[in-house]
Length: 215
Image 1 (cartoon, rainbow, N blue to C red):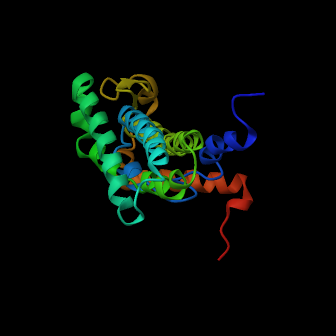
Image 2 (image 1 turned 60 degrees about the vertical axis):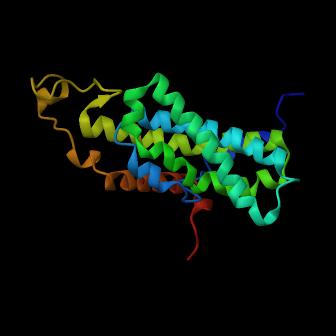
């Protein structure tokens, strides 16, 4: 018998595609707009949310029977705020320059509607193991979109990945720049994040017609 049952596996795999938090549930869009101009901060944000949502779901699940319903939102905010502070302090200790680059956006994980949504919709009604899988799955689905958007925005907007020039030197006109290629400056502007997400949504629905909403 495998470690994960078929039902448990779907908790991880569904948010990666057919129930993705960003492209299907249309949650967490602010992060996709704010920090995906480069690939590195996109990956760090994705990892941070995986930690916060995975651990947060377990904590809320463990406390679900003792949390008074009237203050459950406050308790959830305290849990997620504590985890976000841990992430922020770790980044400041081991990746200070990246911490400055992400700035307030790490703190805004606290208000990420994906996290509060999973606390409410899943962790409060399920055991720790299933809640952990649900948290990891939804955070991974969220992070996957961030990484895809960050990849294309940095590559097409700056000609780099992780800061390394992969298309050539735009000043010395080497690589693709030697044949007339130019960086698309629009890609580094925030609105392009929504356009790239829109393209991903279109591709996803074109492959799976069942995802198309009926008017």
